Length: 262
Image (cartoon, rainbow, N blue to C red):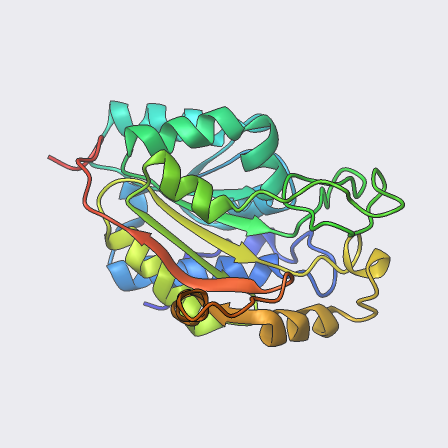
């Protein structure tokens, strides 16, 4: 069996814009799930609202497409009702970190046995291109026409600080590394958080001088820096460029987890 066997062929073609990075993340996630050897009838995908949250509709398992920001609340209920189920949550930066922010920090605090994959396109891609909690300073959106003046949330640092057992960040360029990170998250008991930075050519790219989808993918490639190198530069007292994307495994611990299979 290959990961493509997890896709609903009857739901294709998908709704995503040309050049969107979400499809890459879905493929990486299903590849990792397939490597786990999980059974479809024992696996559930959950999502909230947004471009990323349409992903479970293309997967053959049972799934929940829930209300905005509440994916983790629904996923918690499923896991508490039946700890034997394998649960993966697809979410976006707005869904997870804005209206869903409290659910996020408390799911991390409880260290519930879930794997959360966040497709971070740094904007509200589906609902009009508004600035999100992860929109970089200076970036343009419909609500920040002169450039965002707010600092962006570091979602992995937030997850780690709130108590998640695993947190990692990669991009749609780093396909193999992202797949390995999701696989590590699936294997880790407790709350696992994988952030995947993705290009949004329709609402983010065209406003921020990425004329083609590959321009933003190239940006991910050239501005990404492994966390080990970042830490080494900090120790040496050297300056890190402000637009650096810190990549890699940012947290791994072994706190007692809720909802682990008995």
